[in-house]
Length: 103
Image (tube, rainbow, N blue to C red; front, side, top):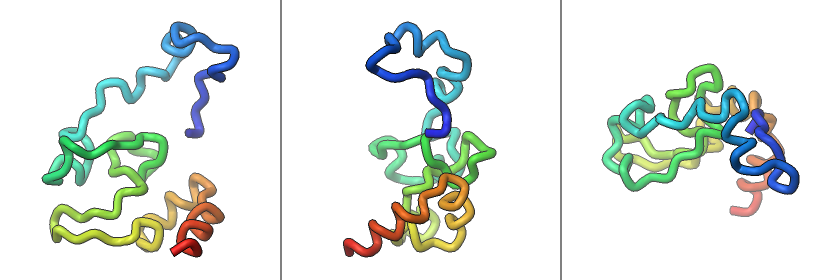
């Protein structure tokens, strides 16, 4: 994540909880996340708020999700042209390249 709340080696959980911004994502649930709120898997899906499609919108869909609930189709998330901007924002180009080379 671009935000850091300390290192487990020298920051207690209490200290991390007290840092500004730590609870920013605390109460977000799948019924509030764009696209996810329409997904039939929303209550069994694990979400990662660290990487989202639109870094400026905390309620945007997780970047690494390749499911489209409107068509009921799965696709490789990293090759979706709509996700390229977020991949660049997070500097994930090399990670994505390595993952696709494994396949």
